[in-house]
Length: 97
Image (cartoon, rainbow, N blue to C red):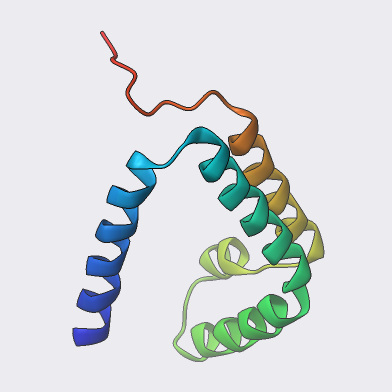
């Protein structure tokens, strides 16, 4: 629980910093995340296989297992999705009606 609280606090601090970052910096971070997903694909898939094995042992439903399962196509789609977010206009500071 302590580790989770520390990670949540770190995420809040990172969110504050990102809100103040320039659009180019945020986009560069997103593109780096996309690259990291692709570069770490083998490690991500290996960890996912372990997670799926534990989930199966815990009796998780087949539908949920499918949602949790990753393959190369899904990791590549995640990386592409992050790149698509980088291509969007920066919403920071925008006011909505």
